[in-house]
Structure formats: C-alpha cells, structure tokens
Image (cartoon, rainbow, N blue to C red; front, side):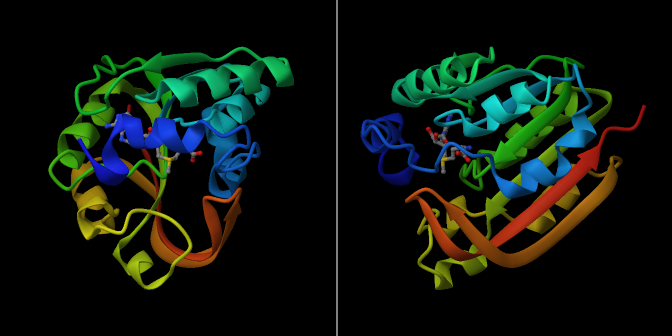
Length: 205
Ligand SMILES: C[S@@+](CC[C@H](N)C(=O)[O-])C[C@H]1O[C@@H](n2cnc3c(N)ncnc32)[C@H](O)[C@@H]1O
C-alpha cells in the first residue's frame, strides 16, 4: 500500500517524539463516552498513538486498540504507562482483522479512513462484533473536507460517507447521524475547521 494508507506512511509520521494528534481524546468521543458504561469492553479501530484508548481506560473501560503501525503502538503503550492505565493494543491490518462475534460493548472509529471498497466489510464485521446493546461511534472526515486544508486524506475514496453508514447499520438504533463542520484542533495533524461525519448506532438486543 502507498500514500495515506500504508503502515510505513504512518510509522514515518509517528516517529517524532510529539504526538501527531495530541495526547487528549477526540472531542466527539469525550462527549459520548458515557454510552460505553464503566467496565465496558471497547475496541478502538485505527487507534494510532493511543490518545483515545488511554482516555477510555481512564473512564474505566476495558480497551483494546487496533492499528497496523508499530510506532503508533509503542507511543500508545508509552502514553498509557505515563497516565497509569492499562490498554491492550493489537498490531493488525483492519482489512483482515477478525473482531469476533458479540464480543464488544463498544466499537470506536475516530479518523479511521479506509477505502470505499474496504469499508462495507469493516462495517459488517462491526455489526457482528458488537454485543446486543453495544454501541458503534464514528467520527471521520467526509468528502466536503477536500475544500478545507486542515487534515485528512486528499483522496475522496478514503473519505467517510454518511449514506454508506446508514445503509450498513440498517436495523440498529441510530442515535446520531450527521455531516457537520466544526473546529478540530488535535496536535499538528488536525488544525482547524473541518467537515466530518459523526455517527452513533446501537445494536438492538
Ligand atoms: C488519522 S490517524 C487516526 C489515529 C487515531 N484514531 C486518532 O484519532 O488519534 C489514522 C490511523 O489509521 C491507521 N490505519 C489506516 N489504515 C489502517 C489499516 N488498514 N489497518 C490498521 N490501521 C490502519 C493508521 O496507522 C493511523 O494510525
């Protein structure tokens, strides 16, 4: 794989000492983290340098991050150590990763940008992997982000589609589904007004 999508690309970006997206969690996740409940088992996709997993562990969730960047994994485990919490972190390619069946109270996807071809199987796997009552939460840049120069992939094929999400999670309770523009300041990686899709859906029991 090349460009924005390969593990080498991300390792190169994460090699610097600074946290590319900062050490604080994503605002949308922070706002809705109560949905996972204390003690909930939460899987965080494309976890990167650990800011979201560490935050969830601080909320007493049992967290597993998954990402294909060894540099991201090392920084995430370092951040967890520094903040005195435990996280699991699996190195894997999400296009081939088995999330299990009815295994998770929550699945989180923050700025996880897979191709249009790879997203439907990922969403199908999330449907299967959630326990009944489990919650899927996503924030990702959408196609309108191409007009902003504040972060995210420059190829529309990797940008989030609300329509695709709504179709993929048919039969779930849709708690929130919107395209919105808001200020996103997360390290040097996300630097201002950005166009995102936000989505929360609960698997019915
Ligand atoms: C924009 S970063 C977001 C990191 C983190 N979610 C955050 O918000 O700080 C995108 C992440 O997706 C990961 N990623 C991209 N494609 C992946 C794939 N196919 N399998 C696993 N991880 C992937 C990258 O390694 C990178 O850490």
